[in-house]
Image (cartoon, one colour):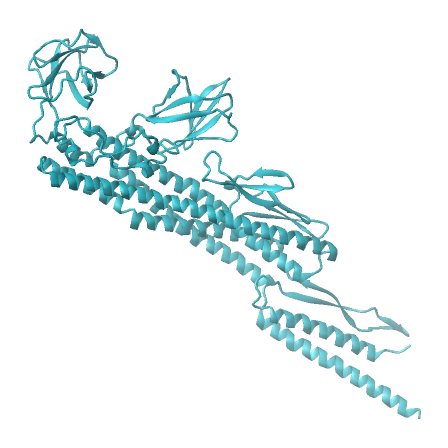
Length: 638
């Protein structure tokens, strides 16, 4: 037996050729997204014994592996999820911030213009031109709020479409990953190209949601979304889908289904673009919409209430300028019933005190064991309620009228929802602006401990004294006994002494509050109801409301409700921008780590190319040498 130079040279040529092939493939795919560089591992063939020594018999390529670090890949996926979520949040918040900065600026401008027009009416209360201009300002204010609400509704629809588009792509990836798993199970996890494709799909998937990868013994990988949804298990793929919002249909939910089983998914646990889109819709867009509705209710209620305190140009008690706050068109969307409710479950929501509204939402539930519970969804505070007739009265500015409700029924209450869409000017006659107001005088003999303030007048109530010249009504109030008695302008009693509760009297079309720092038995207050064309007292009071803190339990003005929302969105946008920078830096760090290990270094590959080329040439030279030796041997024996 002798050393087989020709065979050794052959193995050397084949090994070098394989190395050149792997290196060439790396160079060719240097710019291929998701490609992991490959390395060929060489090993020596078994040696043979000649005499007392062992001689090598050549080499072979034992394996071709992709350079892959699972921990680095996992870090990259986590970075991708965080960066995609941050970028999506910033993109959506920037759009909303622009809407509030560009289109939204007309809301406070229109409100200020309306207050200015009311001030002009106060200057010249009988000028029909100024009154007409004031109504036009009111219409512009209502239209501006309608348009702003339309923009927010458009953002909700656009966000829902984006969510649906992402779920469609997730389903496509899920199907592809299932097919890839099937291929890997057949090839026992050996095909580097298929593995690269799998990793690229998983990395793309990590943009949309948090991804957990579970390697299987079969060579396949199971994929979980958000740590709770099994998207791919072996070759079996689950499907993501959208379902109608519950309790509000225009707020669709996301679910996962396999076979005939469907599971609702908590979007707050998904992360990525999906989590960011749901968070933007539910935590930013919807609160902005309800706060805009709160402003619309505040405008409508404030000016309608002021109208009821004065007289129009015809001498009648003022009528509404804006649509009534409890009109069905202003109340759309205040209550949403869950799909699990009994078929007859129904209720309605009535606004009682706009100033007490917060723009929050609530969950009303009923069980026979615990009765009625109202939970503030922002604070989580739950309050039990006892039904009074068919009504639940809250301290949050609204009451709930129960139509039909059974054990286990549940509703979401949004008292201010729909108001900005429903706001409309209902007054058509400029003479209807109630610029004039009654004059209130206190008797000189009063104790000084008591004062009253008018809330409204209602000329349709029996006993109302009218607005003719000399018309008036006088109330004698006993704060010690909580009683009152009313007299007409002639001093004739309009009825016996009557008890009142709390600090409010509502009688003979007059509704007013009492403030008392002590007790008095016979304090007298006279409302002079006689109308005079030049009277502008009520218009003056209307104009002053621009600076009065009427909203959020006396902590904010009408304008501040909108401005606070605008500032909050601006603050969220800035925070999102900071998060983008931080998340991008973390992702880039993870990407650099992956590239340093799995990426193609062209300088290194070029050096390898020269090395393996020389190796190939040297092995080929051995073959030539072996051939020469063989020819020499043949020649020597001829």
